[in-house]
Structure formats: C-alpha cells, structure tokens
Image (cartoon, rainbow, N blue to C red; front, side, top):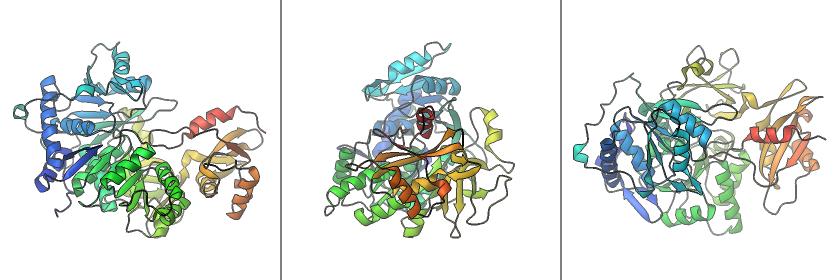
Length: 520
C-alpha cells in the first residue's frame, strides 16, 4: 500500500504523484462509469490541450458553473495543469450573483452545462455578459469538453517557492442583501485544508467515499485532496436524491457518506424503516459539515445505524478549521466539531482579542496555511482580520480542556432579549431532541417590549403531530434551560425551511418572512 501524499504543493503535482503510486486504482465513480487515477490524468491532459488551443493559459481567469460529474473534476484538473485562475460557482446562483462574479474576476472563459436541472445556464451566461465591452468566451460543455494533443501542451507552471502566493482560485460567499465576497485561495491554501481533512478522517485505499454535494463548493477541493492524498475513490452524485444515493452507495460499497446534518437525518429516517437491514452495509462513518450538528444526531445515528458521525467545521475563507475523527471518543464526536485540523491555528478570543480560558465562550479566530489570502475586493480585508492577522470568523465557540472545539452560535446569531444575550444554538439543540421535531431554527424577531423575542421555527418529523408551545416549554424545562431562554413564539413551518446548497437553513429568510407577521 502506498504512503499518503501530504506534501504536494499544487493540485497537478498531487495528481502526478498519485498516478505514479497507483495509476490503475479507481478514482471517480459516476453511475456505472469509473475512471482510474491514470485515466483521469490522461483525460485532463487532453482537455488541457483543448483549452490551451482556445487561449487558456497560466493566469487566465475561468468561471465555471458545472454539476458534480466526472467531467467537472477533469475540467478543473485540466485548468490546474495550465495554471488558470478558477472561479467555481455553485449551481443555485442566478443572474445577479453570476454576473457579479464574472465581472469582478474578469473571466475570459465561462463554462456551463447548457440546460440542466430545468434551468438554462448558457442562456443565463449570455444574458449577464451581453453588455460587457469584452464578453468572455462561453463554452457549453453539455456535448463534451474540448480536447487536443497533449504533446502540444506548454510546460506545467513551476511550483511557486515557499512564501509566494499565486492566487489560482476565487470562491464566492453567498450574498444575502449585498454582493457576494470573492475569496482568494492558492493551490497551497486549499490543499492545506484538504490535508487537514484527510489526516483527521484517516481513510485509505480500501475505502470508498462520496461527493453528494456541489463540487463547486469549497468542500470540492477539500475532498479531492483526500482522494488523491490517500488513494481512494468516491461516488459522485449530480443531485442528492435519497433513494438514488442509497442505491449508488450500496452498489459501489461506500464506506463514508454524508455532507451535512440533514443528510445524516435523512439516512437515519430510512434506516428506521428497516431496523434489521443496514441501508448501506459497507458504511463505517458519516461525515460532513456546513451546519450545526445537535448531539442527539450523533447518538441516534450511532445507536440505529451503528456508525459514528465525524462532523467538521470550515468556511470559504478557511476550508477546514476543525474535524471530528473516527478515533475520537463518543463524547468528543457528539458535543464538538472536532479538534483543529493539522496546520490550522484556532484561538477563542474575547472582543479585545485576548484569548479565552478553556471552557470560556469567545469568537473563533483563525490562522494557518489553509487560510485565504484576502478578498477580491481588498477594502473588505481590514474588517476581516484582527491586529495579529487572524481571521475573525464571526462564530462563537468554547475550546474544551481536551482541545476540541464546540460551536455555540454566531456573533450575530445572538438574540438580545431584555438586554440579555441568548445563544440560538443552545435552544436548537434542546428542541431538536424532541421526537416530533425533524429540524429547528431559533431566531430573534423584533419586539417592542423585549427588544427581540425568541422564536422557534420547526419542521415536523414524518407522521408526527404538530409541536405545541406546551411541548416546547416542557422540553426546555427538562433540559434545565433558564426561563429567559424559553421561546415566546413557536412557528410550525409548512414544508421544508429555506436552505442553501449545503442544506444550511437560511435564517435571514425566516426572519424576513416572520418579522412583519402580527404576534401574538
């Protein structure tokens, strides 16, 4: 068995070294199609030659809005071979956001899947670039990627020396009421996050992973590094459909699945319908991030599916921050987001920047090789970093005596009720444990008497009667929450709550929808 590759400096170097070690091992699985590491490199070189013939070279900005497919991974590797600056965009973005990203990055090429999922992405790209003085070349890859003769390829860009930051990636954080923020990454910064994830999960060539989330998400390169560094394959899903996912994962012997908390609970729901028959017999771990994981989720999955949940914590600006490991204790996995990953420096700080004591709540501030290099709009940098160069995450957490980190909420997700700070996360964890509740979001709504009142918005479990306020009060009392933290308002949401591409609940949409609703 080959040793893990944790010291590559570029994605292309990592691919070449993996191919040298295990060229014939499976790499990417899509439906009934599988390609090996060696085949992926060969395809990427042909596509790189095709791109080069069109004018793509080192430093060329290329935007791509593509689904999770083998084709997409190959296209991205081909662009890495040329040293292009890639701007991956999640498929849920539409005209305003996509147009902004194309203009701000100065994209010279835009890759789309044509019509996909009931939406015409090429037509959108045409609309948002029609008024540009120098519109980019639009490439619809639904009929295939361009190919050429690899012999004609220029030499691969040199590996940058230590300390030289060559931006090769621009990811955008979703804008709600303002424009998205372009986050600048190098190969090295993205790969540092991926190595942190790979070391924590400790997967090997006998494992089979899965990518059931948008590959254009910052988690895409994280997971790619895991595959290449540790030499195992992954099953790709264009869209997450629960039935299809389980069928594919069973067929290909997936050992690690997940994506985010909602995925865990969906798998759990199916498992409960057949308690004696494992839905994915080869599964040994669920893993993911992107949303809070109530402790009850871990214990339910462990008891009913027989596998642990190794949850993690990252963001666009720092792809990995903390990650649970299958080697952690049940208590660590249930109650924390894991230990800071290899290389990441995590400090829990008071508002003045001083570090908190263990167990004291403060803001997560981050440094290390996985951290981004600033925003595309440099005027945003001053507010983002403190005077020690640490990134202000906006997340609240405590670091336990064992060094594991427990998120407690957002700096801006604190509800100020009659002058008292109330963390939404604490109440959410309590209510999620109720058997009637499938999902919950606790928000603060404007209130003339209290400043803000605590409102719990819930999705009901299948077949359950609606949660009542009496149920809420009883659950909070059983958990020994302070009376001041018990929600004043309960909203049973009609259908699923609004979520983003990684299925995180969009609380701002709930607040906007409920802020003007008369109460009581």
